[in-house]
View 1: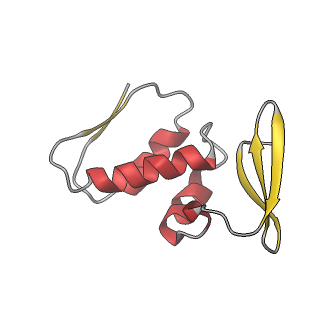
View 2: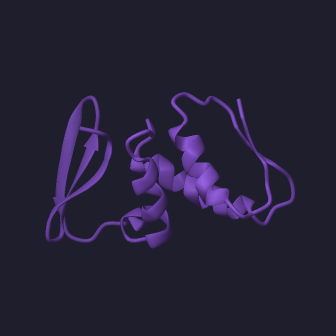
Length: 102
């Protein structure tokens, strides 16, 4: 099972933190990536190619959106299978910035 937050049923979620343990809890938790439609659209398109967890991709999503209004280019260092690069490119699409991959 991949790392990240997984909804089990109702308000019950499980957090998979490989390789050592699985935490299970009920109730309210802070997981905005589960409910942000823009994030989910991009995540669903790349989840099979991404090595990064859903939480890591959420961080990339937030930072890429913030970078859209800052002058300069966007660099990603350490590209492996290209899942997060594809995710970033989808988020940055239409911003006029060039995505450089190393």
